[in-house]
Amino acid sequence: MVISMAVLALARIVRCSDGLLQGVKTHHLSFESAGTDWQIWIEADSSPLPRRFVVTYVKDKGEPQFMAQLDQWSIGGAADASLFKAGVPDKAKKVPFAK
Image 1 (cartoon, one colour):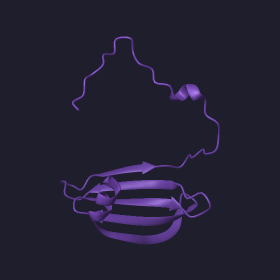
Image 2 (cartoon, rainbow, N blue to C red):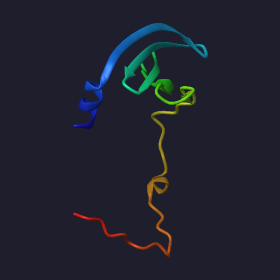
Image 3 (cartoon, rainbow, N blue to C red):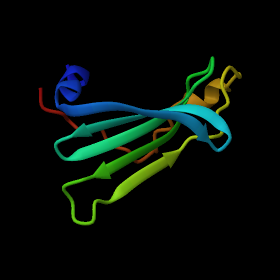
Image 4 (cartoon, helix red, strand yellow):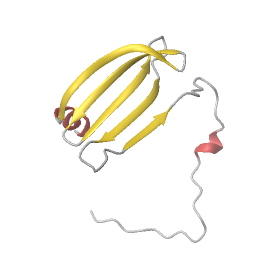
């Protein structure tokens, strides 16, 4: 199972602190592995939604980072079903996959 293997590969998990992130109270967690460290800030209220996610590639030159700021959540609303229909182009071709 992918999730359990990912957890086993972690060297350290730390609950860093609780604090404000853009005025929202959050829990800050840090996860370290052999080549990639990541951090997540999760809302500390009744809607524990992720607010920020940072990945640091610690073995790469300069330790580049990726950051996603997730601050415009809209949950519980209705979505038009047409948004979830696949649109296959007319010239698309089926690709055979090995079994």
